[in-house]
Image 1: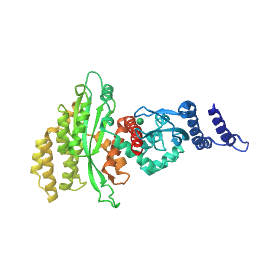
Image 2: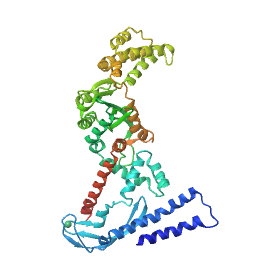
Image 3: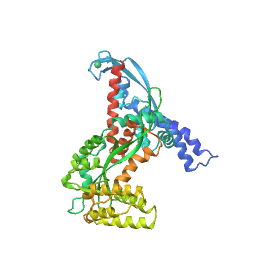
Image 4: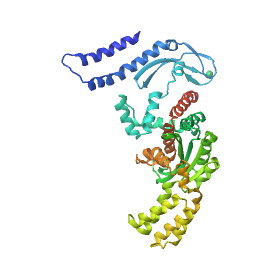
Length: 449
Ligand SMILES: [Zn+2]
């Protein structure tokens, strides 16, 4: 087999570097030698695999049109470079053209699932995952450093946008079967496990699409609305689903409804967590009517500290004492008493007066959701450390840290991909992208004729 020849060639190249009398390579040097040379040889191996495995398709003189089935004679042998994780392989395969359908096709490409791009799907899949973590620039550099395969940031960016725009919430969220499995993991004894639905918003830097003259409009902070669903397992939190998008409230509601439809609610006890924002409670209540509503303890405490600071000065003993006693009264659900106390307060400044007024309103609006002590007793969480860290992880780490202002569509593509990775559904969104690319190959040939 030709493959042995290729192996011999590789060995001929590397063995002298290792075994020459005057050399004493270290482990690292030997490993780097293999990294340096494998791209060339393993790439060629793939070429040989294709020749030996699919020889018939390479010699094919007639092939049926994939659209109408009519058989056509080969037009030409067409060359293509296929770059994979293993390196580059050059193939020449017969190319056919159906006049009736104006469709160019190659049976070999179909069997191999060849991407139209030079860089094939295995590279595309890994590079997009990399770019979900670091900037496109840095992604390109790291990719080359780790694989020995150069890859431009433009290339990564283009694939990233295509994968992201094909990704849909239906695939990003785990299936109902997956959710059921995770609920089983969380079950201890006869108790139904607690499932937490935590919603919130995070402001992200966005900008309009670049206009025709290449001028950018002014940037704007927009709210990514999202939720995280997780189970309180025997020892730790079991993640179920994350979903965040820069979007309108109604769309957040639709997305939450879809997530709710994948949860067997009779198998769990549901806790709803959020800050005071009315939009999130409206939808959580609608889709999880059986849920126990809990005002996020940490958000609530933040509001208290604001008043303490305005009234008694930042970091003073008075401020600390007042805040702590107020928070512990809320812990025991003494909301009425706290509100009465606020009313009796004598504001020291205009600012303090305003903060006190706001806090009274906040507590009045949310008093039904303040019952931290009984939450604790029932094993419910009182704060969404969960959503806070998930939101930071999903939205902030990549979208804020890079310092870029995002076009809404691209920011949302990034969020979908990051949620999919976090939810364990990245394979599914990539497969969807791959099939749509393979379908487009045909459509494109049809159009271009
Ligand atoms: Zn045809």
